[in-house]
Amino acid sequence: MYRPDFDILPPEVEARWGGIAKQFKQAGLKLGVCTRPRHIAVRSTWKKDRIIDINADDPGHQAMLWKRFENMIEKGCGLFYLDSFGSSFEDVKLMRYLRGKLGADILTFAEHQCDAIMVYSGGYSETSFSKGDKNGPQPHYRLWSGVKNWRIFEFLAPGSQMASRLYQGQKDIPEGFESADDFFYSNRITPLLPTGTDQRLKRIRARQAGRLTKSGLWK
Image 1: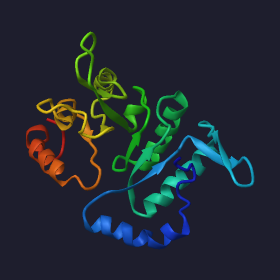
Image 2: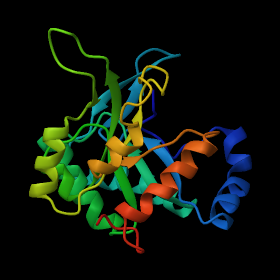
Image 3: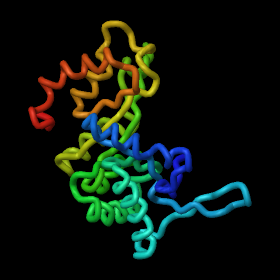
């Protein structure tokens, strides 16, 4: 899983990091890393670690966590995925502290969300397609965070961000059914694309004109 000590890079990665960061910058893209900000890694055995929770009220723990983010920002990172994070009051306290340090330009996306966390961080979710049942729900997309929850988050914290990927790909979606990207845009969810999906990217760019302002905000 994602390491709590996410600023400690393997030597092979460290040796190539400068070139990676430079290429992202030249392409006008944000570089990001996966983090696990709620935990500390400690030894379980000589060869294995286990994790314990950070004390969200401990200034020393807060400073230790911020230093990890600061190290990666200095390495060129401008966005962070927050794994196993976002749904508890302790997470909210940590994120409020972090947002005060990060400012408004560094993007974060928490795997689990509650209404309070969305004031300080965007959310990340998966989306799957349900084929439905002739005696039950009709075919539909399911945002794992809950579309209803997401609408509540948007209402309580205007300007919130939700990003999602299609979990199982396109193969299970019937021909002629609403596309996943239309579902994302109609619900003001930022679609995430894997590499090698150039045709899908072209279709998304065509949709953006009707959904986003020139500055990139939702209409």
